[in-house]
Length: 361
Image (tube, rainbow, N blue to C red):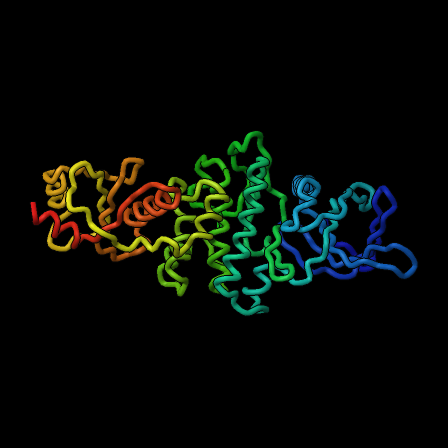
């Protein structure tokens, strides 16, 4: 349908009235207007009126708006109704609180705000993850967390636009029938089911946006290694946006990992004098020894060499890593860090330490 005329007064079935002031946004989602809710001759309340593009978007936003009405981290939906336009058309109306500070996209893409500090980003993303954890526990996945759907209110992030969100029983993943390719994993259209880890993927992109002041999309991920983001946060973003087997399994896990950044620097510690019985994982390049030679020498010393970090791993040998975001090295180091964080005792040693001990056998 065409846009609403200025000064049009919309009335719902209960008699509540909203006067259109001006259009403030438009896109595939529909059109958004600044409007005034009319209480009497002079009393007014500024609100946002959205004319949804499809009945599905309207129904989804109205449903989740009511379901999450008590969540401060969600844009408050105040009203929803179908409004007749002419003899045969209907406008699907959604009324919500007016977000005067705009979206993350407004702040950075349009250069309306300064860069956020690292501490502010950590705090804001932690709050967003806590909200997602509660949503995911209820079976709700948002599916469209991107800079123009995340608003700012009093220096905090507020989640909006639940038009393609889904709710499943028991936290089950569900099929994907609508998504934004630029902010979704590359394989999302190849039969991948949408679950909490995919929401977390989008939060990873959002985190990079907040830290750099530029909108990061899926196709930009390879460029993360050239950014000025701190190494520990860079590692967190990489794992949030990695292929699904290496992503954080839940929003709670992602929040805990973000909270504990820097507490485990994964620096080499004391090398055991005996290797008999140790389950060893190698990562990176070992000076003076090929991976095959190192494996053979470790086995000769009585160690068990593993391809990946498991519940049995007791020793990780960290060699030189040319690319901190390389998939193999990143996967092993991440697995060791996460297991240490949850209580598994894994020693980290350098390649040089291992070579010296092996030389004594």
